[in-house]
Length: 274
Image (cartoon, rainbow, N blue to C red; front, side):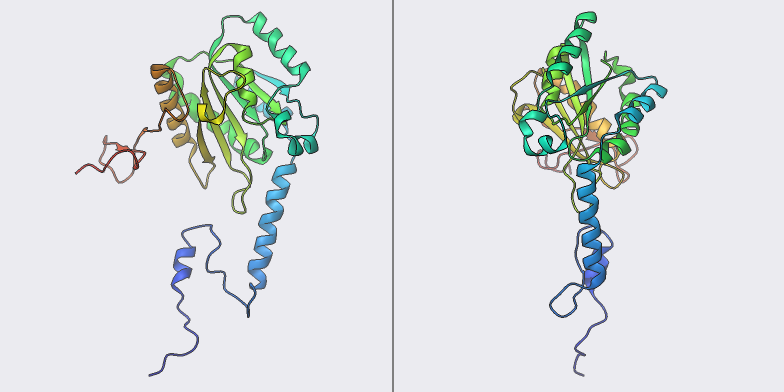
């Protein structure tokens, strides 16, 4: 019997349920169906809104205080959002006033710290608003036994990743990690990135940093991100380096593994065990 021109069974539909990627959208003639086109436009609008959403540092500072954490507000050299987006270099350094403010704090607390945690709006303040507190809570749970000394949480308006290098250098911090809103995607307007640096100082390139990306409920969980960050911190202190020479080989507990058994998190570095 001849197969009908339209097959109601579409195997792509099963795959679509497993990913937020835009597959199996269907078609109307040579165009997308109206629903798929409207979904795309909505996702694009969400991404644009995330880029331009103001950083609510007041609310974040109050929430940190409720959790028993002090914070310090600074600003990059980018005076507003337009200059931030058009001049990436200005977001990588502190304003003159903020640098002076941080030097005064460092002079009053000259002992230095093991870790400086920086929170910057980046390209998605939405990500920072949603994920900073729950991530820091999980990080505090997992790092309590290490006894790291920490500076107040540094909040930076209009900040980019490299601004943490200047902050760490001024504070005399052994390590810095910056929590920053990543560039929004069409399915992830609220993705948080963590960038870790050992021995931070002005002028470092991205080769000296380790990145833990896509921290959010639909991506890398808070607990897993905290676990990976702690691994990098411990190894960085042991080996006195970070970046391309420090690979993420954190032991990861999985549901499929036996109780108490770990597997390597980076399958590219180690062959499976028999």
